[in-house]
Length: 292
Image (cartoon, rainbow, N blue to C red; front, side, top):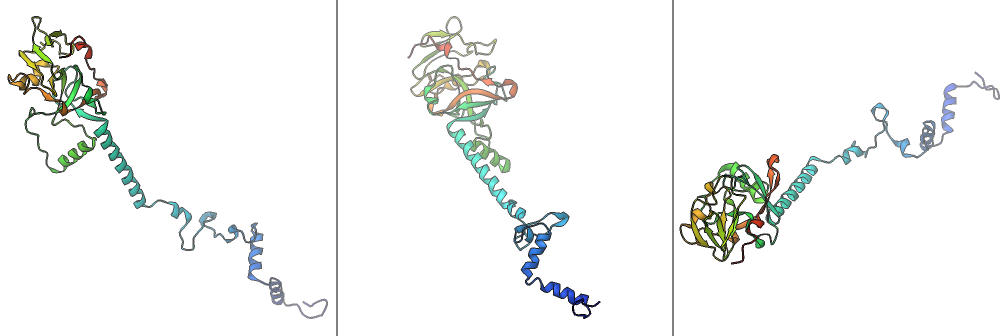
C-alpha cells in the first residue's frame, strides 16, 4: 500500500504503533477502558475485580472480603453466650434470694391442699415473713432434726443439684417443711372442745382445709406458743408429724418453730399444670380469735 500524500508504502504495524502513540499515558488507557465498560473514569467500579459468576468482590489486598470481616468469630460468640448465661444466673440468684423461691412437696402431710410432687412458689419479699397470720401456709427450715440427718449426695450430680438449688434454678425441699400456722406467739392452742374442734385463745375454730374424714387432731394437747415462735400443723392431720408430735408434753416449748426459720409463704402451685393455681391462706377461719 502507498501513502496517497507521499507515495511511501503504508506499514500496518507502523500504523498501529502510531495509533498507540496518540494515547500518551497508561492512565489515559485505563480511563478509556473504563469508559468503554460504561463506568466513570476513576470510579471504584473501574478498579473492582470480577468474582466468579460475574459478581464483583471488594478485597483488602490480602484476599479477605468485607463479608469475612463482618462474620463473628467462634470466640466472639462464645463470649456473648457466657455473658448471657452469667446474667441469667445472677438474676435467678437475686430472685431466689429476695423475691420468690421454688420448692417441691415430698410428702402427703398437707393433702388435700398440697399433694406429693407439687412444685410451689414461696413469697420471700421483704416484710412478707414479718406479717405472718394464722391460716398461712409457710415453708420453713427444719428446726430441730424433724427430718433426720440430711442425705448426702456425692459426685458430679450432687454438686450440680446443690449449685442449681443455690441459684434458685432447682426446687429446694430436702431440709424444708411446709405446714399451716395455727398459733402465733402468745396464743393458747387446745385440742379439743366438746365438739371435737381446736380452740385458739378460747375460741373454737372450724377448719375446712383439714382432709375430709379426719379429726382436727387425734392427740390431745394444751399449749401456749412461746415468744418468737409458731405452732404449725399439717392439713392431713392423721399423717402429719408436726408441732404436736415434736412437743413431747413440753407445753409448746419443743414443738413450736422459731419465726426466724420461716422461709416464706406458699402462694401458688406451678406444677403440674393441671394443679396450677394459688395456695389459699385461711385467715377467715381465725377471724373471731382475739389477740392473746
